[in-house]
Image (cartoon, rainbow, N blue to C red; front, side):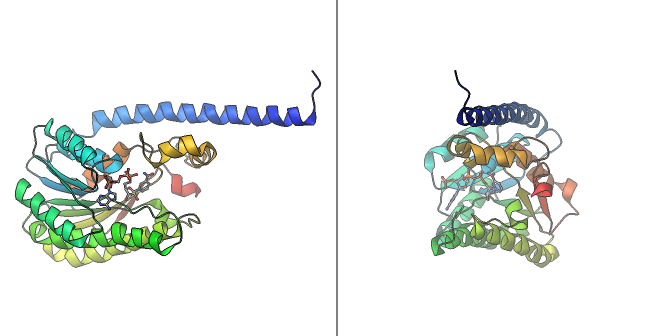
Length: 294
Ligand SMILES: NC(=O)c1ccc[n+]([C@@H]2O[C@H](COP(=O)([O-])OP(=O)(O)OC[C@H]3O[C@@H](n4cnc5c(N)ncnc54)[C@H](OP(=O)(O)O)[C@@H]3O)[C@@H](O)[C@H]2O)c1
């Protein structure tokens, strides 16, 4: 068979694709092993027995991993989200740890719904010690709707849930608020300017809120994850729909794998725990060094 310029280009492209596939497969094996390690390690260093934790957006992904990690460490947990099926699944899984589970369908874009969820959570759990604001509007473009999705969920839902939870947090001797931000707040993000800008606003709110609530001994911190991959999550979908983008992102993570929800959950538990009792107003990146190369 004659070797044409075209067939040489094809074979070199195929070779590059094979190299990328091998790297993605190797990273996937490492990610699975990291999840197994984190699942073994997450509960033991922490003791949250008797604590009450409310997680806004706790039915999937990072929120679900935090809910299960807190429950595994002994906390009673309330989760809200819009979809009932995933909420029921996570609530049932929480009860397997022998703790109280509360779940309520709630659209965090609706201020009244936030108030109802927080009150129901506090009534069921007997108070609230830790509030985690995890949901995102994930506005992906530059339209008003994209901006408002992020303003309403990433920022205003966190402000409103904090305000509703404040009376309960003031009565706790272990009070903490945790916002889930993103490393996108620290670098330019051409495809998602609203997402990045509003996460940066959330980071700024974290510092002002921490200052404001210090007199009540309520600590406020944020976790800023890098790219986190989990089944049916955003990166899992991109792996199928835009494998080149997935591979390019993987290549930008110095530790050579995507993060897993359990990586973030472990840091959330640390920041909520008395081990972090002298930390407030901080934004902690959990990204395997991704920001270093961005
Ligand atoms: N995944 C990543 O790579 C990554 C990277 C950096 C930062 N983060 C941040 O980490 C957080 C969690 O990300 P994720 O990837 O785990 O998200 P996810 O898989 O989309 O899960 C988000 C959770 O929030 C709930 N939620 C979303 N919108 C809501 C609304 N309007 N009202 C009530 N609940 C709502 C979802 O349930 P329903 O849809 O059923 O309501 C779900 O339980 C977000 O703040 C995100 O910005 C993620």
